[in-house]
Length: 397
Image (tube, rainbow, N blue to C red; front, side, top):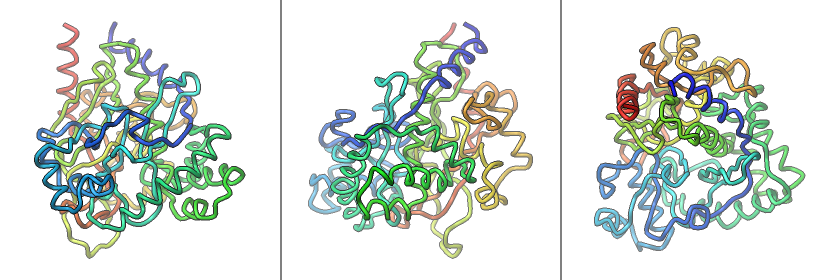
C-alpha cells in the first residue's frame, strides 16, 4: 500500500476514536508494573542506570515513596546498580509528563475508546498545584503530595467516574473555545471538567484542588491523544508516515511512526526555550523531557496557538516567522471535531517542507533541583524525520 493510501486509512482510524476518562488505577494493576520498576518519558535510555538528572531526581523520590530505599543515597545506589529498573513508559501504553516517573503504586488516569473499550491508554494522575513529581526536583514535599494523590484524590475521582465515563473530546472543545491550546494552557478544559464533576463529587478538598490547578486536564488529554494516535498504528500498514509519538528522555528526542510503531528513531535533544516564571532564575533548562509532545503531534498544543491568544502572546518572541501557516503544512487535515486546527503530524510532509515541528513542552531545571522554570517551545529537527522515513522505506523493500 502506498504511503498516501496508508495515511488516509490510518487517519480515519484516528478520527474514529472517542476517548473517555473511565477510571483511576494504580500502575501495578493498570499495566502490571512489577516491583522495583519505574517508567520514564521518551525513548529508552542508552544506559537506564544513568538516567538524565531530572528523571533521576524523580526516580529517587519514587524509591522513597515505594519504601525501596530509606534515604536518597540508598535510592541512588539502587538505580546505579540496576536493582531498580527504569523502562520506557510508552512500551506499557503509558505517557508521562516531563520528568515524572511512574512506580507501581502511582495512580494513573485510564482513558478508553468508547467504540472499543479494550483500547486504552494511561497517564499520571495530577496532584494539584505546587511541587510535583513531573518537575524533576528532590523537594521532599512532593512525597506528601503523592500520598494525598493516591490516598485521597484517586478514590474520590474513581467514585465519581463510577457514575459514568467523561467524554474528553467535549472537554477539549470547551477548552479550545475558551482559549486553551490544550498543552501549555488547559484552563478552560479543566474548568469544564470541574463543572461536570460538581454533581458527582461531594469533596470540598478535591473540588478546591481542581479550582486551583488549571493544568489538571493536561495528563487526561495526553492519554486521550496517545489513544487516538495509537489507532493509526493498529492497522498494520507499514507505509504510514503519520507520527504517533514525539518525546524526550532528557538526553535524546525520539519519534515513532504509525508504519513502525514499536521502533524509536532518536537524535540528540536540545532544551526547549520560552519565558521563565522567574526571569532572575538562571538555572540551565534540561534537554527535552516528557511524553507530552503527543499532544502537539495530534494537532494541538503548539499547533493550536492561533486559537489561544494568551499562550501565543507568552511565546511570541520564541515563535519562528510565519509559524501560523508553516506548521499547518506539515500536518494532515483537521480532526472532524476540531475544524480549523491542523491534524496529525506527518513525517513525509516535514521532510518535504523542511519545517521543524513545534511542541509546547515546559522547561525544567537541568540540575535536578530547580524544578519548573517556565513554559517552553521545542523545535524537533527535520533530519530526525528524514531518518525515520529512510528506515520505514527500507522495511518496505
